[in-house]
Image 1 (cartoon, rainbow, N blue to C red):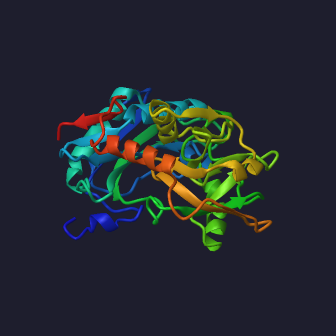
Image 2 (tube, rainbow, N blue to C red):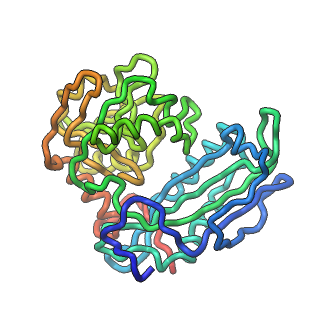
Length: 338
């Protein structure tokens, strides 16, 4: 840990000493276990391996200006995981167990919470998997809930600077990240080809269009899209989009700061009318977009090489709340006594 350069951390995996686990068996959750292993021993017929009975979440812990440790909106992550569990018939993790395990894993790895002022945070990854053995297509009767942590820097290496995005229109996106109406968290494998194609084109992430008409904006890789015009924060409405807790938070912030908000379908042709555009999510926080490149037509939508004023204000307010620099009037942050 002493060798970590906090301000230079990428968004990647860094081993921390402990993770926490809990097993569901015989219709109930067991005791919370602490592990120092990075590996999971599961049956070769586990439903998570064969039928994708798995979901994950992502949230962050921040060391604030006042030295206090804050977790951002963990209750929303718990709700989203419960929604995912309902969608694919997994045992639900209730709020109490979710928070108890989250608090415990942060406490166990508190030496890896990056210092204030480094721009880094401690990323928390809850993971729920079907571990029961089934060959027929049906839900498991056993599950394991695991939470590990890793210190991370910004998702995009540019940080809060404009990133370039590539529009993906064809089959490089095999399925929507939100997997339709049930909106399961953790289904990112279908996006890997699109991500690689965007990176090969020198862009930070792909922009996906709707899977039916290929003309409405859905998502920016693993993040939600937003646009700014006429003092209005506009973000797509689609059954394919993973419901972003960060996006939801920004909408509420925008209203507090006096901006109008709209959640509606956004046609690709509307891009030319936006004053600012960006991506948002737990990992990305708010990332302004400089250029959007259509790889089919080579058309470029240019939004400049500096963050726009509205995106900047929203970013500074959100991050200020997370680090304890701005009053948390929404009570989004839970302060841990560790």
